[in-house]
Image (cartoon, rainbow, N blue to C red; front, side, top):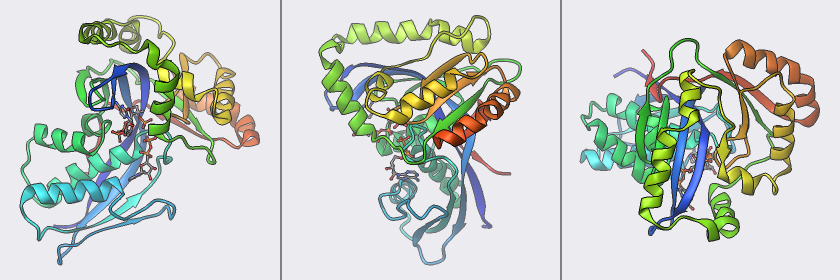
Length: 311
Ligand SMILES: C[C@@](CO)(OP(=O)(O)O)[C@H](O)COP(=O)(O)OP(=O)(O)OC[C@H]1O[C@@H](n2ccc(N)nc2=O)[C@H](O)[C@@H]1O
Ligand SMILES: Nc1ncnc2c1ncn2[C@@H]1O[C@H](COP(=O)(O)OP(=O)(O)O)[C@@H](O)[C@H]1O
């Protein structure tokens, strides 16, 4: 088969509520995640000798067995029972790394979808979701993407139908010298907020139901004003990371953003706007201030789907 290309979009967290600690040591979450049009591209070609190789245009990113693309490819091949399958994979990395945008998870999800097609495998969608969940908490969301409620450790998904009309858009900021480790952010959250964690499973269920009925979903559907974004990890990361405070301050200066917040465990920040034109206008208005403070910026629309095979 000829080369295949798969798009792997970034996500932002429009709501991130840490409910409590689970028996497996992970945190029980109630989130709303949203795909955005900032994408990595994976180019896949079959290898004749059964090797799985990865090349990347960013030299600082590992291309060995620690890369989520290689881990996903190896898992898919193992589960297929066909050890002779191989692929040469080239990653065009556009999503900043360690940014709270799930670039690695999306790349892993794209590898599952792309290699299933390249190798002619027939795993069902639930089987792909289960493999994704073994590889990372955010990876199942990345498969279908769009707007979804994410519960459990992030892998229990409920799709939110796309709003009608023009999609909302974001202006995204990230300082290139700043990154935040996800385990560190959750560890800090446990230190600072662990005493207030919920313990009763009924209380978890109540919070999930409250999110299903929240003004945020009405705001996204366009039937109410957008409420402020809640991100419990922002509360613990913001005091520790100067670029998060500076980026939030910059975004709050822009013209009437619908909401401003940190994504995931950070350190990228976003402001939501009614459409892409407004996000691009805000990017232009903040360009000089961003350059002076050393921030990179992206204006991109909300995306209604997750990973996709290029036609
Ligand atoms: C914080 C979030 C919010 O969407 O995103 P990022 O900021 O990483 O993009 C996610 O919860 C990140 O998900 P993901 O990056 O897939 O996490 P995993 O690889 O499964 O776990 C990495 C580590 O994070 C912690 N972790 C993760 C998920 C969870 N529900 N509870 C946790 O405590 C654990 O310490 C775990 O060892
Ligand atoms: N394909 C990949 N792209 C980016 N990071 C990856 C990838 N595979 C593994 N990683 C590792 O995962 C970690 C987190 O990456 P990333 O998904 O970009 O951030 P986040 O979890 O904050 O959203 C990084 O330390 C990186 O080394």
